[in-house]
Image (cartoon, rainbow, N blue to C red; front, side, top):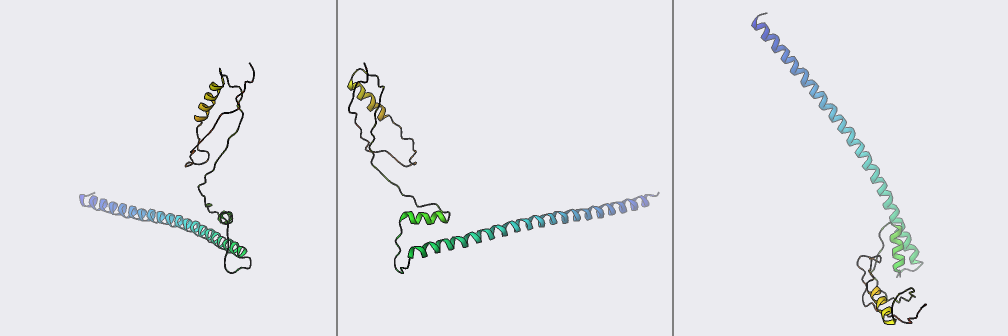
Length: 162
């Protein structure tokens, strides 16, 4: 083989190699694009199903609200009087959080405490008042609830046994 024949053969091999690799790159890219199209079609189907579900829910909500007010009208054409309970029932029907108010109340706590070991009545009163004053409000009535103006007294102190 001559040098020119070797160069020609080498160039042909390189050209063939580039051509074959270029075709395989195009084929690989087309496969990737086809996979992506399939993924997007799946996403589109999922979105369509969600939209149809939400549309159905919206139609149901509209009908629920309309029926509520038709029932509340009860033949009247002017005024509807609703309690907060009525409104919260409607909100519950349409799966919405109820309207919540902040409340306050006064309490009276009465009880009998037994088994207090003390020397005298004053010692009993002191121990009970100290225990009451150390009561912790654990927040079970809500994060913003507070106890204010708490008043208490200890009365009817009696000896259980000697």
